[in-house]
Amino acid sequence: AIQLTQSPSSLSASLGDRVTITCRASQGITNGLAWYQQKPGKPPKLVIYDASKLQNGVPSRFSGSASGTDFTLTISSLQPEDVATYYCQQFNSHRFTFGPGTKVEIK
Amino acid sequence: VQLVESGGGLVKPRRSLRLSCAASGFTFDDYYMSWIRQAPGRGLEWISYISKSGDNVYYADSVRGRFTMSRDNAKKSLFLQMEGLRAEDTAVYYCGRLVQNYFDSWGQGILVTVSS
Image: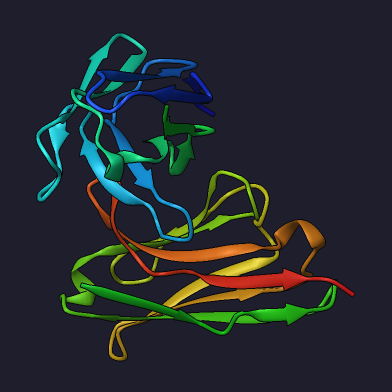
């Protein structure tokens, strides 16, 4: 089964900062990768799919990219409403896998 | 799109529980559906997904043989029958709609607590 790791596990940044979260797959991903945002007490929300496509209604400050088995979620200018935990996710061989999450806070 | 889970609560170890998810706002039988859970303070864990017709169901290793996922397209409902519950099954359970290989809509979640 494909494993996903995320780094960092948490980060603290200032408003307006550029924030980057990395998700690394244990092997090549052929069925795409997604990113979700989860705020405390709420269900996750799809932010990015197919590694770089922005889900409808998500602010354009969010972007995704891929390079081999490394995937990146970038927030170009951190806003207060972006405080959340972010998870990556992939699908392979009838199994879905989530990364362990990255908690984003405001400094 | 609205997904509303029900049926959660406190249950003793080794007992059973059945979760339901009522769907509205979309053509239910056009979509694969899934259950995902989240233990308190922990990350997300996918547990099962079902095809549009309900003919094909897939499970995570952690629940295979104990949990059964099904759907009733006429009633626009999803179910998760959980048997032999363990303390480690304690979690918020979400139903999710699948588009391609992603969960584009989620319910608010329902808490299942397994404790004596």
